[in-house]
Length: 463
Ligand code: NAD
Image (cartoon, rainbow, N blue to C red):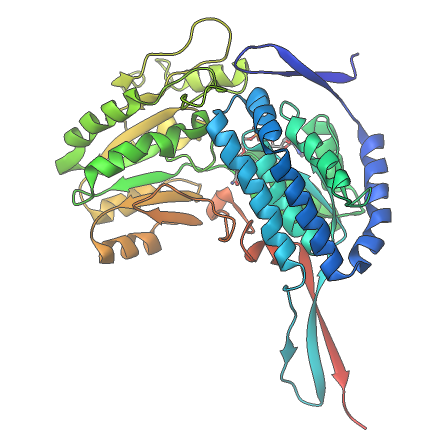
C-alpha cells in the first residue's frame, strides 16, 4: 500500500505533489513534541512571543504570491481570492501578535483579600481544517492559539495540505521554535480521530462538516477536551422590495458563487419579496453571465473548478431529475453555460428559480455554485423561511428600511449577519455559528477566550 497521497490540481487534473499518509504513531510523536515545546513557549517574555509572531506574519507577506499560487493550484480557487486569503493570513498573525501582551486578566472586588484572574494557555491544541479555505482557516486557529501560549498541531484536509505545510516552514524560518507549530498529513478517519481522542490534546478546533463535527465532539468528550466547532451552513440572502435591487442582484453571484460555492457562508438561498421577484431574476441573469469560469490562475476569471470530480458529481446530483422533490426535480431557469472543455472539474454557476422550500437543494448544504431563489410575501414569512434550517451561520438582509434591517438582524438565527453586504469574515470581528453550524467563535478578540482557561486566584489579606 502506498504511503503517500497524490495532490491533484483540480483545474488541470495533474498531480502536483505527494504528501505522506501519516498514522497514529506519527500523531503521537507530534503530540509529544508539542508537549515538549509548550513550557518554553509559554514562559517566553510576551514581547518576544509577539515579535516572533510578527516575523511569522512578515514571512507570509514576503511569500504571499508563492502561497497564493500554491493555494490556487491545490484548491482551484480564483487567484484573486487566493491573494485576498493569503493577505488575510498575514493580517490575522499581526492582529494576534498584537494581542499577546494585551489579553489581560482582571482584579475583582471581593471581601477579605485580593482576587485576580489569569488567562492560562490550554496546552496542546489540535486544529482540524477543511479543504475549502485551507490557509485562511489554518491561520484563524494558529493565530489565537500561539498568542495565548499554546502549541498547535494542524491537520489539513487530505486533498489540500500544501499551504499548511508551507506555513509551518515559514514559522520555523521566522524563528518560532520547533514543535510549537506542526502539521500532520493523512486521513481524517485515522489521524483526525486520534487527535480528537489523544489524552494530551487539550483542545480540538474543528472546521468542517456538521456530520464530522458531531463525531469529533463525541470523541473529545472522553477526556473533556475543549472543542470549538465551525460547521456547515445554509444561509439566506433576504431581499425586500424596497432594497437597492440592482446592488443586491449584482452582489448575489459573489455571495454564493465565490470559491465556486464551496463556502460555508454561501448565501445559497435567496429569498425575494414577491413584487420584485421577476425584476430581480432579470438583473441576476446579467450578473451571472458576467461570472466567468475558467483557468483560476487568470486574474480576470471569477470562478475555478470544483475541488474534486467526486465533489462535482455530488453538486450535479442536486440538479438531477428525480431527486425526490415534488414534481420530479428542479429545472434550472438559467445557467451561465460557459465552462472550459478538457480537463478540470468544471461546473457552471446555476440559478434555480422559483425553487420549492421543501426541495432537497433548499434544505442541504450543496457546497457548489447553485443558488435557489424563492419568493416571500412579508417580513414574517421571510424570518420563518430564513430560520427554517438546522444551520445558523450567516446571511444578508437587503433593505433601505433601517428599522426593518435591525428587526431582521435580531430575528434571523445566525452567528454572522450583514445588512446590504455579503461580507461575513473580518479579522477584527468574531465569526461562528448558531444551531448546528457549531459553537465557539474564531477571529476577533473573542477567539482568545476559546484558547485559554480563566484561572481565578484569591489572596487573603487577613493578618
Ligand atoms: P469534512 O468534515 O469532511 O472534513 C474536515 C476535516 O476533518 C478534514 O481535515 C478531514 O480530514 C477531517 N476529518 C474527516 N473525518 C474525520 C474524523 N472522523 N475525525 C476527525 N477529523 C476528521 O469537511 P470538508 O469536506 O473538508 O469541508 C467542507 C465542510 O466544511 C462544509 O460542510 C463546510 O460548510 C464546512 N466549513 C465550515 C466553515 C465554518 O467556519 N463554519 C468554514 C469552512 C468550511
